[in-house]
Length: 94
Image 1: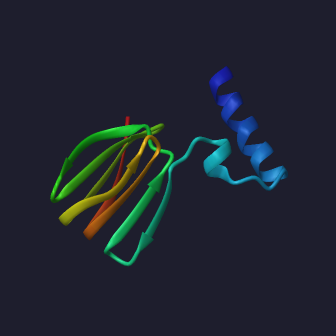
Image 2: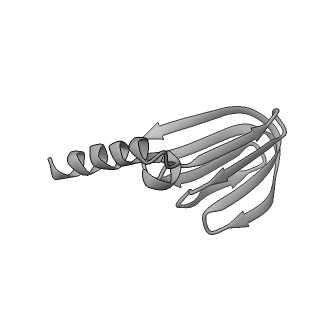
């Protein structure tokens, strides 16, 4: 019950103070440029990578990106820039 109260309180504070939700609620921020670039901030780690799949750990579960010819251009502790042909972005809840 306390966990749900904390979630509601953070959401309310975010709305009332006009703060970005990704910062206050620990959500990933995903920026895509067409189907060729995807920039993901606020992830919790790289789980799997191949030329057709990227799997990241996020607070709510996992983020799966599917496509072709993937190349990681930048990787930092909480940010990743992926280049290739992006077909799908899927949230997998725990």
